[in-house]
Image (cartoon, rainbow, N blue to C red; front, side, top):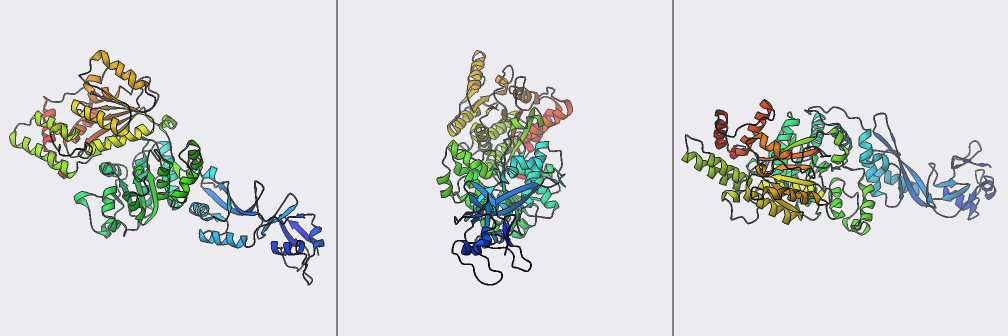
Length: 628
């Protein structure tokens, strides 16, 4: 009898003899001195002739996961059974349940091969090849094995996204920037494989467009319905962006009086858009719809795993979940656990085990990073600045809530009654004041929380919070001093960032000193400015975000204000957020500004006194938010 070592597998060399030896046979002969009977029996002498040393140290079973890139850039993932010797992971040559390393034979625990096969079957793998979804399932379920994940560097979102082919998206209108094409390709790849993920690009990089690219691709593949869940302040923005970038999609906004109680209606459209609050209230309906892709925008709102809105989103029947947030975690690593558990349940274990293993320290954050690197894509403005224009304009359309609509309509109706033939500029000012904040127009003062009666202030707080989380500075322009005071107070108290203001009450000689103090702050800060008092002459390049809280009739006034940050000396693209209420005087102002820019570039135009200005004023008084 001759026993030979063929690539780590001990086999009998004689013709017609049984094939490979298993660990139990070798162990019985060598350590228990049980040679057996018959012509195919082996002896200690047969094993000794192999020249191997035999160890009775039972190895820790392990799995090696490797990957290689295909011609299309997509990863091919493969698992191999292994054992751990010292600090090394050594692959087993199937069907052996032992390994040979440096001339020594080591056994694996009895039943290891069977347990490995059961594991592969549990994750749905066919053989050793794994899909991306099976890869994550194996990582979560391989509790009895040590894992040597050699695939993770290639599967990290930052690396994989650059390898995938950026193919055109059917039905997507426009030309995404190169980094957005990379993001869409990465999102499409994960969604196609049924893997949830986190799109955590910094504000201003077009996360909404990238998600719409996924929806367009999914609808082209006949997969629907899809769902967007977001803060109520973003409903109108999602409706407009979907109509702009994917106009062929059938979109339903499920909110307020437009809510439907029909499951077939929800299931029959391409994309449903709803708010976190509405979803929680109508969860019995939403749970009965088999959703394809659920996108949770501003997903930092789901950072508390015990909150009602978080639990409700997790109750949805869904194929894939996308979390969209510029701030994946704020103060605690638990925030990141909650969002990760939403998109890939179980990937980070239980919240208690996670918190024990990963304290809220810098070291804890470093330990967590590789655990989420494959499912979180985060690009910063500074990293893709070469792809961006020097100035990014972001419209922020908003809807008045029903209480605000009633108050707005009261002002508008009174103006129409008192001045049926002659549009009144005073009424326009009152409507603009109301849109800036109801309190400024003497309305809704029974509501003591300034954000509770103003969707615009609520959204402004959300935007400034994300800007401050990124460590950036922001300029906010409003032409109303009372509103400036309100913004300074609300933002500084709620977000705990340095805040100051410049308006007509601040002597010109003192203004540069306020700017210098703002610029010297290390980290986030906010400066509230009146566009006429601070719209010229000041250089405030420490800020790379500008918010126009209320729009101006004259586009030159707005552009001069934006130029405080967008000027020579600025090293980053400037993101300009333009806030306005749909169906109100503010939308008429926005339409006028855009029309004037299209016709005359940035020429100075008047706000009243010509026929066109008069027509705009008439339109402003006729615009009805109830019709939006």
